[in-house]
Structures are given as C-alpha cells and as structure tokens.
Image (cartoon, rainbow, N blue to C red; front, side, top):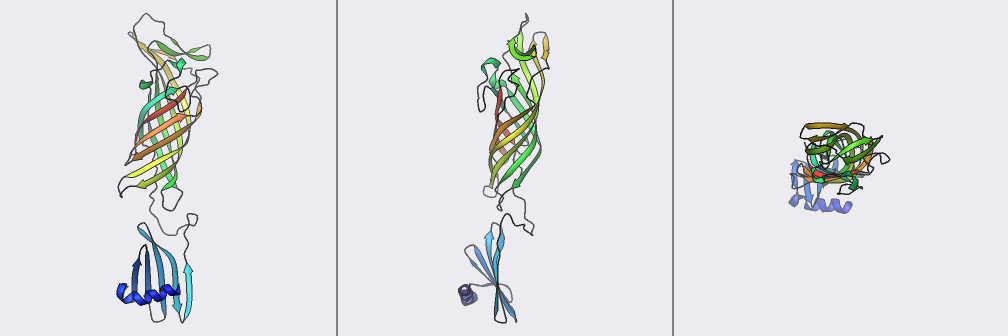
Length: 289
C-alpha cells in the first residue's frame, strides 16, 4: 500500500484530474484512486468498477504521521445499506399458448395408445396472475422465478370416440350413434405454480435473455367430456377421475419478452387405477407482460 501511495504521489501532477481544489482522481484499468489533501490529513480511497457503480474496496488516511487503513469487503450475504436497482425480474410468460400432448409417459410427445387422441389439436392457454423473481447473486443474473398461472386445456379425441365413465372407471370408448359424428373432446383447468432457477442477462443494454428450468405444482379440475354430431353437442360425463394435485418439470428460454416454454407432467394426469395413463406434455410460446 505504501508503494501505491508513493506511485500516486509521483504521477498526480501528470495524470490527476481534480474533483475539487484539494482532490485528485487517477483511473487505472477498472480501479479509481481518489486523493483528498487537507491541512491536517491525507485520505486515499481505492474504488473498483462494478457495472455502473463504483464500489469502495479500501481507504487509507494519514493524520499527524499516523496511518489508518480500512478494507471494504462485499458479499451477497452482507446487507447493502445503499439502495440498488432491482434488475432481476419475474420472467415467466404473462400469457402463453401451446400444444399439449396427452402422452403415455413423462417427456413424451406421442399420445397414449388407448386414448385415441388427435395430438396436434390438443392444446392449452394460460396467464400468469403473479410473477416475480428473487436474485441469488450480487450481479442479479441468477436466482429463483415463480408465478401463479391459471390455465385452460383441451384434449381432442378421434371423432368416433368419447371419454366416458363406465362403472366408476373412465375409458375412451366408441360412440354408438346413427348421426354423423363431428368432434369429441375433454376440457380441464388448472392452477400451476412453477419454481425455476433462472439465468438472466441484458444483451447490449437492450433486450433481456433468459433461460431457466425447475419444477411445478399444479391443482387440476376436469370440466366435462363432450362430443358433437349432426344434431349438436352432447355432454358425456363430468365424473372424471383426475388427479387433483400433480408435479411437473418446466423450462423456458427467451429474449426481449418473447420465449418458448416446455412443461411435462411427472405424475399422471388421471388416477391410473380408474382411468387411462396420461402425462400432459406441452410446448408453446409465451409473452412477458
């Protein structure tokens, strides 16, 4: 430290930029040295650049020939008395829409064989009512994001089949009708709370790039099963053995408020003892509101 002070004193007249009559500032790489000279003492502060803010890392004072040195240590576990702008945000989509495959297993994209589904017509739509993030590091690039999502889904069956309840068991069975069959579906809704470890970074000071993955907890409720023929719509059953609580895996990647999302059920959507085995896997696009 004494060598640094001697060097500073040597080059002050050439490299210094005065902040006041008795202050001199020297910038070297990412560090700034500030020398304040008064009649009774000399103060030397060393500050280091941390993004847009200068962080003090050491301070030395000379009073009546005595040297007093202070070292400043920063840590994400030490509260910062100064106010710092919140840059880590809740990055889950405010509105999302996608296809939702009623697969036979987790991470599957093919409908279960005994479900007779039309996979490309199965889908979901949802919104995030609450969306926030908690940073884990000082740079506010890594942390936890979570939301409360309200969703609505549709499982589309082959028009010749329906999702019915037979002796307290749900099965996808053929529709017996002399009318021309047109459509068959099952509607459901859910409340999902995803919890993702997220990495966020502003690119060129503009759009924010985000990528994250984690788990989710969902509460589901089946609405009804119906089919449509030439005479109109017909309700089949509301007695659906759906698993009310389910666990899932979620991931997303996006830039500037537009992102792709992925979700798959880790637990079956229906009670497998009383219904076909089905794991919902969805893939779609979302928009940060």
